[in-house]
Image (cartoon, rainbow, N blue to C red):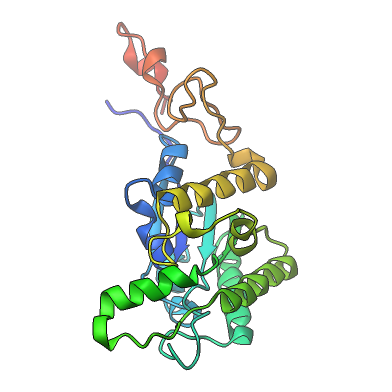
Length: 262
């Protein structure tokens, strides 16, 4: 007979292509899935090319009324909103509306779930302009405009706007623009001036787990001190036990004894 085990928790990553690509090898979303291994399923709801206007249209189907509340939601939007209005009108969202849209997203999440999950806002990263122009020429060849459709200054404005929204709605914000710009060189973080390399993904992941540990310690996982792994019986998390018992506590003579009783 199968044992009765509580439904596994989940985490929702909501964003654009930087979130969509986070499940690639070495991606920050894949790393977060490893961090919550056996404890929570990490669901990637990143939509490449989306801005906050279009993301609003995904809210009801992503965060459904009556569904099990996730333990954590990351909202990582703004890289497309911050496009130059003249050079990329299709994706551009004015700064004021970007802030309003972020608030609407947060309000929806809060209205759907009780209790409300932990929410982390992630501000867009800086633009590495030389890489961005080089990528444009490589991809579009002779038809490349030679003009930046995203800039370092615009990304800074939208990152600051995200940070101000976080203060207003009292949620933690990871200001990637500010954190990355504190490094000596941002080129290693990006492969096209916008999207993340393995090093950039590692940087984002580390910022996320540091924020979880600081702001939401109940859902922070402590790795096994001997191995550094998050997925064995020497790892721990205050509010998230493993989904099904660890193999080393199951007795061969009576395996069912390790499982919760009906």
